[in-house]
Amino acid sequence: MTTVALHHILLKSPLLAQDIINELAIGASFEDLASNHSACPSKNRKGFAGQHEVDQLPEALYQALTAADGSQTYLGPIATRYGYHIVKAPVPPLSGRTRVDDPDATAAE
Image (cartoon, rainbow, N blue to C red; front, top):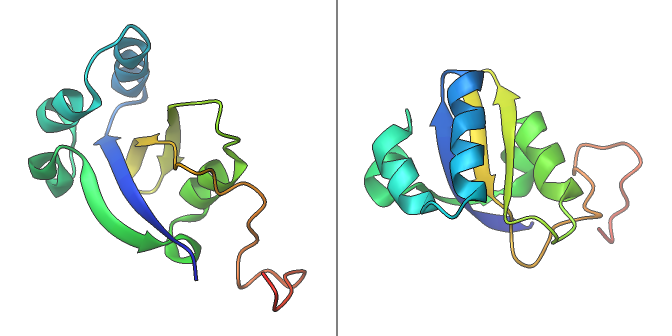
């Protein structure tokens, strides 16, 4: 299975999430923003939420991470039941992955 080092900022407000995206666009530090604003305990690790199996992530995060083509540094805001996530895009991109529980997936994937 594919794992990803997940770096994210979890926010409860979509407006704050958009403000954070705007701050990142003008060069703010992801790590500082995560430490100061994230609602996740990973804020104590500058947004690093650990290694996760891609197939075990919430569907919206999975979709965003596997749709990333490498042209973006940050993805989001991504709404889940936990709130609004801003994530660092994985390098290399995970584009083209299919969920293990997808009936169209093949054993080779």
